[in-house]
Length: 261
Image (cartoon, rainbow, N blue to C red; front, side, top):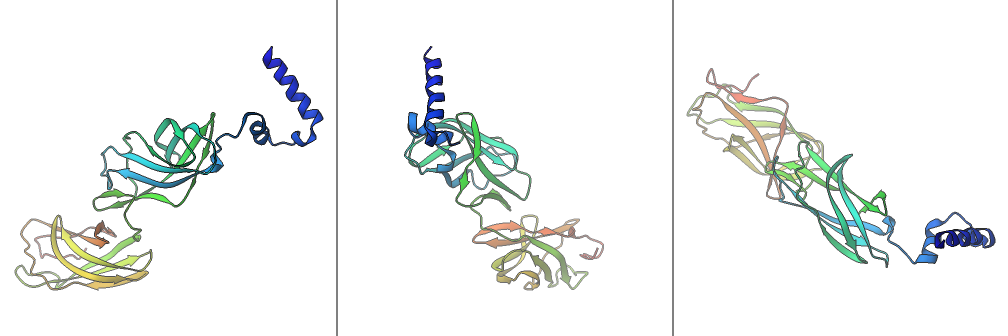
């Protein structure tokens, strides 16, 4: 009975009060029942991972700081997504006016690509919408795992790696020369060549302009002892190491100790 009376009053207002008859249902709702939480009033200020960096196979939890710029509070559900894939979710989260720190449960999310960029959606009264973000929140692959705190690097690419002389003579000095392509912003980095976990040679405070550059490393008397020695190039940016992708595998094997393909 009460519901029928309410519907009749609503219809009467729509006919006899033109100012209320305009298609603004949210404002009309607020006029009768008070203001409510709206997704337009929310903004993601920060998004963090723990652990950071995270290695493949590790469980990870997320923490978000969400600003509520309205004077209304409300309970919502929040969903972290990577493109169209759900990463983790938090239900029955109370958002008060101002900044709210939200802890998401542990997730078994699989990190596999070079980078993963996250967005957050909010469900308010069974209506899901994306929340505005203060910046891009991306986890990028580093030598130690995927990190959201790592600086933007590259993309970097090893086009070629040479030894001088080639073939190398065990017990004699050799030098390495690397041709790197930097498709990102110019940067100063420390660069090292590794054989598995062993540092072969390194070059400090090297400048990598946008585009292709050649780096000549200091002499080294590296010991060739195993069946093969496969080299990787690592760059350090703000004390964070990054393994650089390469055009091919650069390995020296016993028959001549040569890097030539």
